[in-house]
Image (cartoon, rainbow, N blue to C red; front, side, top):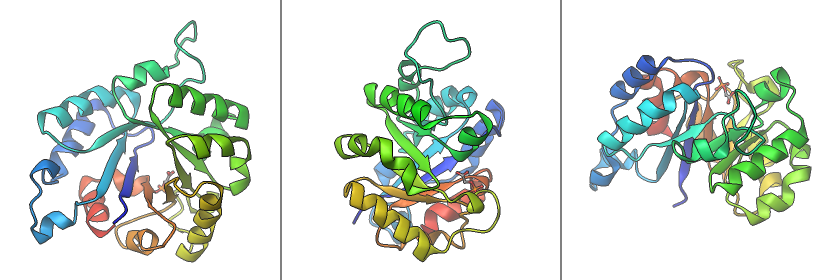
Length: 235
Ligand code: PGA
């Protein structure tokens, strides 16, 4: 059975104390202890990745260690440069201390921060240089043109997120999303493909049940720990 990825993208919501509270309310059995019980199956084979703001990564990292949780962390952005004279940027080396994954090229960054394909490419190479796993977001397959060889040669995840589905309450049709995922798999068979855009606990299974979709990227519905827990269970 393939792993199902469930990624929470908190965007620029939640203070450090709100992140701590969220974690306390997300009652997931410790994966290490997961026995054969049916309840534990709801969490088996699921890679849960929380992507908070940079400011909440340290507290979440220590909570995960203290609770021996298998939850993983991701950053939502990364500097396109190595460490150096780049005020305000957070480099791959700095993120490496705190997280395993990095969201790159989210449509909100492409739109609000004028991130070009060139910048996205630089961010990808910096991420990979520190053995972090990029979660590259695209709204159209053409956006993968420049990164095809990176996809084939490296460990990365692609999130397909149609613009009309993000934050709209109007998700893509699962068959369309599956067709897009198939096109991505044709570029690189082993690259996990996620769907993102208005995923909730009611529709998550319709996406994760699709042959070419390996998980979901969840924005709004990940902010409430109970809703997110339902998404994990139903995925
Ligand atoms: P949404 O966001 O789930 O709120 O639509 C998804 C995303 O922006 O990654």
